[in-house]
Length: 162
Image (cartoon, rainbow, N blue to C red):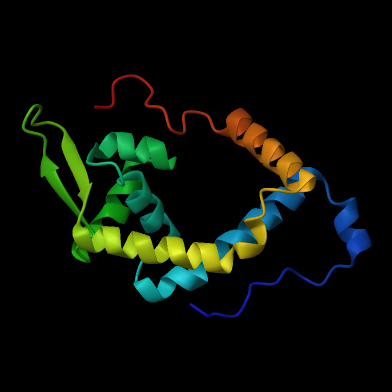
């Protein structure tokens, strides 16, 4: 992956001002994700992989719950975990309390990659780190509202996914 910033087609500020909020939000999210992805590519991990490693920071989780927390389908999570496990960043094992359940845990190498990914994110996304300005507070409240409104089951496990 290139270290070159991803650019949207050339638009003038007047064009951006005419975009509806959803389009602005989608374009901004894509640009932020590309900037982060370009940085973590050298670690041999994807954005999805970093998300998994982040979710496992406090200990093992059932694979199904991990998929729900990451907002992906079980099959997508399985493919992501295949790569992370192959690279030694996570380990999967049967839950001794319920043999039907697969637990996923982050390895020491996975924790190290996560530390590096967090540092890369902080460096590459530093312009977004200002949480002190009134404008930033307004944007943060709006983003939180959007995530709450459209997040569905993200972060919650519908039914019993243990």
